[in-house]
Image (cartoon, rainbow, N blue to C red):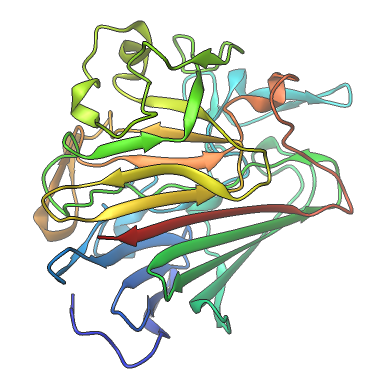
Length: 352
C-alpha cells in the first residue's frame, strides 16, 4: 500500500460488484482501511510502524468473493449475537426460541447466514473524528431464529488519532437479544505468528467453559492461571500450558470479564509487537471480550500476499456480552426492548 500520507482524511469507493462496494478510508497520517459492504468486512488495515513504514495488520483476502467460502469471520461485523449460545436456544418471557445451530449443537456468531454474510447498505458520512462510513442492515423477525425486526447501524471511522472506531446501534419492534462485535484477525508485525505479541487484558476474571466452549457460569479469578494477562505477557509464554481450559479451546478462545462498568467506554486490552514497535489498544463499552488466538487456522486458507494462514497467525479481540448470556441470568443482560436503543462502541487505537 502507498505509504505517503494524503493531504486530508478521505473516503472513496475502490470498486463495485455483485457483493456491493469496497470503500477506502484514510486519515491525514496515511492510516488506511478498506471496508467491504459485504459483511462490513475490514479487508485491510494499513498502520505505520516505529520507522514510519506501513503494513497491513489484519488477515483476509484481496477479493471480496473469497470471503464467501474462505473466511473464518475475517474482519467482519458479527450479529445478531457475537459468540456462542448453548444448544442454539434461549428463553425470553417464558417463550423458547430455537436458533440455527452452526457450531455443533450450539449457535455461533448469529447462525448460518448471519451479519457477516449479508451485503450492508453503505455510504460515506460526515464526521468530526475522521473518514467515516455508515453501514445499515434490517434483520427481519425470525432471521436465524431471533425474534423482532432489528434495524442495525455500524459507523466505521478511521480517526485522526489513528484509531479504527466502530459505533453500533440497533432498535427492535419486539423484545430480543443483541450482542454485536467485530472480528478482525490482527497480526501487528504483518507477517509470521503472534507468539511474541505482548498482551495485557484489563480483567481479573474470566468465564471458564465446558467441552463445547459454553461458559459454566463461574467468574473465575485469573490469578495463578494461564489466563492472567493483568501484566503484559507474550501470548506464546502460556498458550501451550498444561491446563484444562487451554486444552478445551485449543489455545485461547475465552471471554474475559473486563474491569469496568458495562456501558462505560474503557480499556479492554493492549497488544504490542516489539519488532515493528506497533501498539494496539482496544477500548469498548461492552462488559466482556473474547480473546481468540487463531486456533483453527490450519494452513488450508491462503490469504493476501500468498500468506498461508496457520495456527497462531493472528489474534482476535472481540468485545461484547459474555458467551451464552441469554441462558445465564447472573450475567449482564443483553436484552433489547422496543423503544430502547442498543449501543456499543469498539475502538482499536494504534501507536508506536
